[in-house]
Image (cartoon, rainbow, N blue to C red; front, top):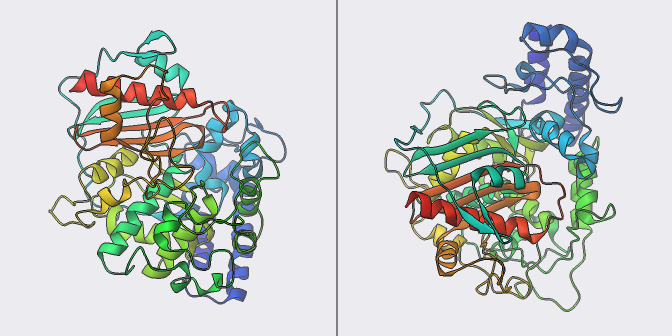
Length: 473
């Protein structure tokens, strides 16, 4: 039975240049594969040393494919027997979100990015573990344990000078858990875009979108440059409101869970309108539709899906410890550029450490132009980007500037730390914080109670990170 499943998977993932009719056939085969996995789950899961389905979720929540069918070299843990329905992701409670976020790689079609058996980049333990972290928040003296609780942390990794200063797993997560990135993936795409620029596959960030995606000619995206796109200053109207079931983002979420995700997403994004009276570059507005287009530009420029480019340039060369999975709209051809990156905590950390080092492999080879990180963190000052907490702007090439709102506990040291640090942020608290000067990286997995989260949780992150700088300096 297992051999048959692997054979079907091979058919599904064959050519990256299939005709539309072949893609429809492959999507049908994908659905057959998932159905077979559900039917065979009771027999296959025990053979993998895993529990059978417990019925913990309602009838609309079914087991996902097993590890062999996905093509992973090793099985992530825990491998939950039942997983929640992805279409209702924005309505999950916190307990459900834990199960959903560590099984997102099974909820959608996905493209695996492999290590190719490479020796992983070493992350030794620090000789002196992290202790005595202190920070002031909402009038209280806080410690590490307070932070874990306040932030609903399910995974936390602190890397200082290339060594693990602290590592924590909560809610049943382990060293082999593949956790979903949400919008942290946008920052991964930003780095891959820089690699493509370095290789000359993308000629210039001033190129127009339609040079790479002519199918978007005569749409609202026509006339927008890649620089404007990656900075989210396209001027294209998009409602990212997570609590609104009729928002564009909510529609996108339902498209991704549909039987024809690519067609649905493309129709949604192609039909958007421009903000009246706003030219490209004039206004900043966070836009996952634009991030998806940035991923498509990367795929067109490189001739491969995001997962394959990540694997060939970075994942197998830096290298990482475990395979990861990128959510696919058309397996083997089109990945989801706005989110969809799933990897282990330490491999998230290795990626962040690669960025902190300026994009250099262990053999000294540079994968990024020397000024790419500086470009990426040159915050746009377009209208909407400048705030009291970010007077120089809050957004770059899909990286964030983060500081405490005035009057919420910051001081000169906090401000200095903020100026040295850039952030990748995903809803519900997924986070990378990178401070190259201090050689300090934070990776955080969380399940915040709501996607539309009070700014105070971001304030706490900035204050906690400054506490790390003080404790580890």
